[in-house]
Length: 243
Ligand SMILES: [Zn+2]
Image 1 (cartoon, protein in one colour):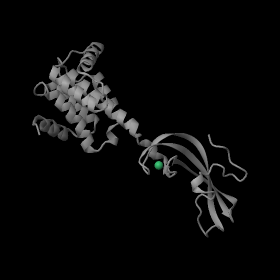
Image 2 (spheres, rainbow, N blue to C red; image 1 turned 90 degrees about the vertical axis):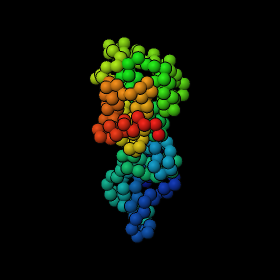
Image 3 (cartoon, helix red, strand yellow; image 1 turned 30 degrees about the vertical axis):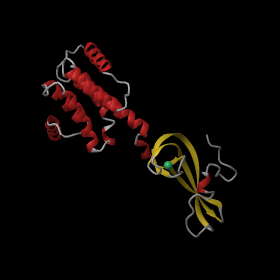
Image 4 (tube, protein in one colour; image 1 turned 180 degrees about the vertical axis):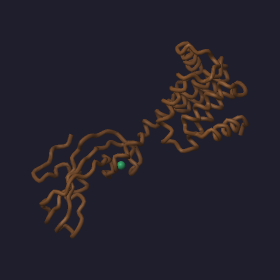
């Protein structure tokens, strides 16, 4: 926690910003100084220096200054987010973007959930399907994912939900897919969203053409990734043809 305001109310001004903050107007004869106070902290992705950084959330009190002495309050400003590394200030909506670490975890969970949904929809998991699925899940970041683990999870999923293999995408699985994909979709470029759907399609195709249940699961994946229906159809058809 930062120390409270000093004798002239500027103890929380970051070192590199300098004691005068933003000085406007007639040089330093008259100006506006902002005294920042820390009101929270955390980790964010800094768009300025391009990485996961610590931040402080700051609110500021602006004062009109004469010869460097604050004479009149000019109201509140902020809150802003200050990067601990580059000291740049950003609007608080910068916190809407996930950190690199969080984004990687979301992506990994998304691919894992899609793989499970497609395998569960596909009926009895063949060795080939499990192999394609495990490769996709490992490359998404679950380094030690094995065919056996995925197979066991799919069986547990079927037992837990009382579903039979090969049925259309059940409500439970649809909810799982939306929970894993909805928060991720806004942060992915269209090609990134399509890539996740195509990974699911390749798992489905590993043991033969799409079954209706697999198509259903993949349509749910597409919808959760905000890919329009026509594009889902086009992508599923394209995944058929080895490139
Ligand atoms: Zn930064």
